Amino acid sequence: MKIILKIYIDADACPNVIKDILYRVSQRTGIEVILVANQPLTVPRIPSVRTIQVSSGFDVADNHIVELVEEDDLVITADIPLAAEVIDKEGKALNPRGELYTKANIRARLNMRDFMDSMRNSGAQVGVGPPLTQRDRTEFANALDRYVAQFKT
Image (cartoon, rainbow, N blue to C red; front, side):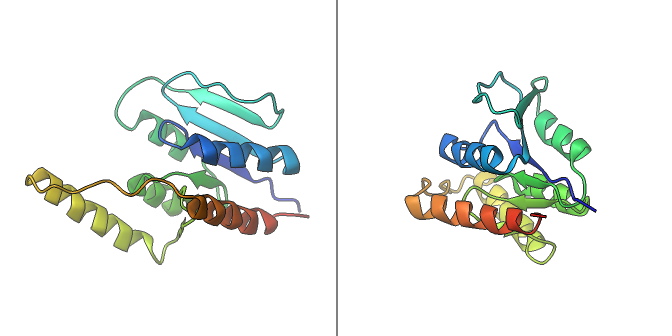
């Protein structure tokens, strides 16, 4: 039985360099890549790449992704609560730095996120993560290739 893998992108916040990597993988493999955002997106003319525009609002795109995701589908996101919901539905989540979120590590990531949120809300100066480096891009591309390789027939 052939498994049909889909890759969903939390596209509002996904860096363009990561989207470019995903377009190339889609073109090379035929895996469907679906960008979900609350704004219009321009994507290359690749038959297996499409966009879904949802209405504006807090977590509207995230909620739509969760509705669509099925077992073993991959979601590209840095949004840890979204990743947790995807994992709860037996999907997989990969962040733009190449870290695969799993049942084993997602709770710790959620706890750290909540802690940092509390720090910010109390007035502490908590910075955002560093910019995406070439190493991050390579880590992402390698993690994506390893995941996709599991589904080659």
